[in-house]
Image (cartoon, rainbow, N blue to C red; front, side, top):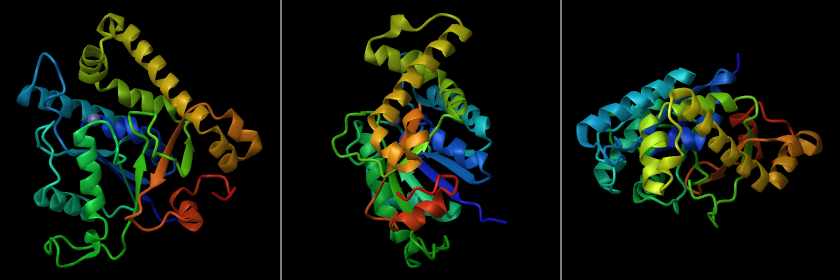
Length: 277
Ligand SMILES: [Zn+2]
C-alpha cells in the first residue's frame, strides 16, 4: 500500500487555510492522504460588531464545521488576532505543531501577503524549517529526521509580484468541497469582510441566496487563478486538459525546506499527470 502523504497548512486566521488550500486539501483527502489545518490566531478581532471570547468561540465553531466537510483536524491557537509577533515562543509552538504532525509538505502564506498576521505566520513557519530536525531545540517533542518541503500559497492579494506558482492544482473535481468549506465561515464572508471592504449591501438575505452569492464570488476568484496561470497549467497538465482547467490553486516552494524538485513533486502529488514540472 502506498504511503499516506501528510499536508500541514498553517494560516494566520481561522479561515485562511480554507481560502489558501481548501482545494489542495480536498484533493489529498480524496486520494486517501492526511491533512491538518492550523490557525495561528483565534481571529477574535475579525468583526465590526463582536469580538473577544465570543467571536473566538464563534470562529472556532466555524473552523470545526469547515473541517467536518473534509473530515480533517483544524487546530486554532488561542492567540489574539492582529497581534501575532514572530517571537521565539511562537516559533517553538510552530516547531512542536509541525513535529507532532510529521508533514511531508508544510504550506503557509507568502512572505509579502497583505496582513501582518499573515506575514508573521509566514516568518514563523519559515523559521521553523531546519529547526524541526534539530533534537536540541524543543527536546521534549521528538524531532523530524528530514526537513519537510515548505511552500507558499497564493496570497489574498492576487497581484503579488513575487508569487510564481511552481505547481498548479486542477480543482475542477473538488471545487464544491472548497466552496462548502468557505461557506462555513459565516462571520467572515457574510458579515465582516463585506463590511470592511464596503459591499455589505450586496450580501443577499436568506441562507440559500447568500451561499449562492458567495459561491459565485469564489468561483470567479478561482477561475481568475486558472486563467492567470494558464501557461503553467498547460505545461503541467498537457495541451488537452491544461486549457480546460476552470479552477486552480498553486504553490511556490520556500527556499528553507527540502527542495521541490521533479521527483519530489511526483512523490507529493502522485495524482498529477506525468508531464514533468
Ligand atoms: Zn487572514
